[in-house]
Length: 314
Image 1: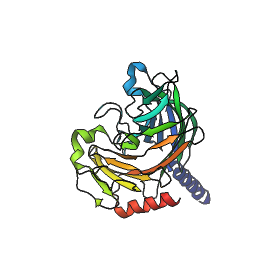
Image 2 (image 1 turned 60 degrees about the horizontal axis):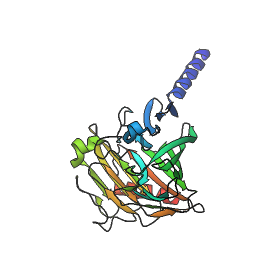
Image 3 (image 1 turned 45 degrees about the horizontal axis):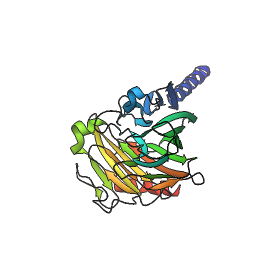
Image 4 (image 1 turned 90 degrees about the horizontal axis):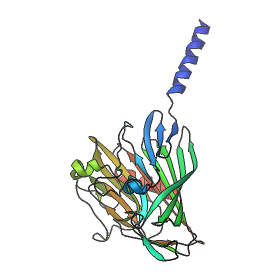
């Protein structure tokens, strides 16, 4: 009888161990890296090399987020309303650079006009039961291929105690050119999030935003700088959209060590984020850090403030 009890306990322990979920990365070579939590897809890093024959589809790397079932994307890829909007992405519509002939040029790494971004390599990737991380090296290029910025782009993923996905983004921009200026406007530059094109097609009037001073706004209403002068230097802003008949919340956290002033933009079709003006020199690389909190659980103003405080004091 004692032996049977021991066997039962061992079997129960094995079952409990096998039920525990771990993060893992699965690569589709030359295409994308998928992040799994157990058997469920959580995120995808899209890194396919720029193909001149399919330029629009391949001119920048980005990150997709999956729905709560791990089946469909909650974020947008190529095509649709504003094809250059891609999930979680980073770029500036006005970058100064020098081409291969030494001529000053203006490069747009937002729309990817007169230039583009290419994934060069994965510097580091890790996954365990607590979190997963990835650092990729991305070249910002003039149209002739000249690299004017080398970016180390870090993503770290983990679930918090409320089962929301926390996504930490750190970008380090460096250059060998004398001086690179980064500029644009709140609608066409910076670190931004774009929800699925389904929001534009059918659910945009159900989109709402939560802001530090205003709280939860009415569905379909947006505020943007410079029309709304208070949309600057915010520590956080949250968005809620409906995709696949499910409501998702995304909290955008801006660190106070990032360049300031920062200017915010939001759209009912699901793009929101902020931008700043800055520069990069060989002696002074630029490092920025943001955090996104993503999930289906409702976010209150108090929740957002708590997440922001944790991010700023970490």
